[in-house]
Image (cartoon, one colour):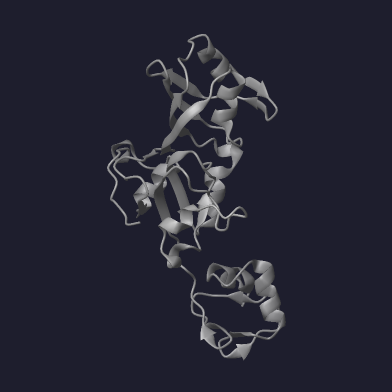
Length: 250
């Protein structure tokens, strides 16, 4: 079998949830992996669609990609295990879904749309700076916002984190704004407003790409369809760009 017939064995094992590719190479070296009934000796072995792979005698099958939208509540950390013992977003998910990785993060005090997936390519596409995937937020401040600061937010603010700017800002009321980012700096919105002398009292993410939070209630999650996943990447047609969301269970 040549390299064009399938994927490398360590990649296949990783797609089954066994571990990282490096960890899978170690399993192969230890003689624990069989291909079509024979122990695998070469790390470069390729796996085709008709091949049977076993690890310690157990048949391995690649996991299907899963993409989940969550309405993250305030007070939860985007981490599997928090060193300070704080509650994490994974307390909202069944054990079988703890293998999913969160794409980007919302800080502990922030709320709203968060994506989790086991699809590494999707995760990379959503977070790579070159893609400039839009994220939209509703922001509530501790005091009335001054209109002259609108231009500063979109032209760029220099902080300890470097130059930060919003793609678009709209003042909705005295203390409430709609902010669109296509950057992904850590705590970017909070840092920008703090630099201008404000404190963010509430931060709610309502959109990623063309996918809206919609009717998904706080603390709930829902599996995304292929069409909804395409909305994240801006690949879905305009009629699909609506806010209706199927509710999941927490």
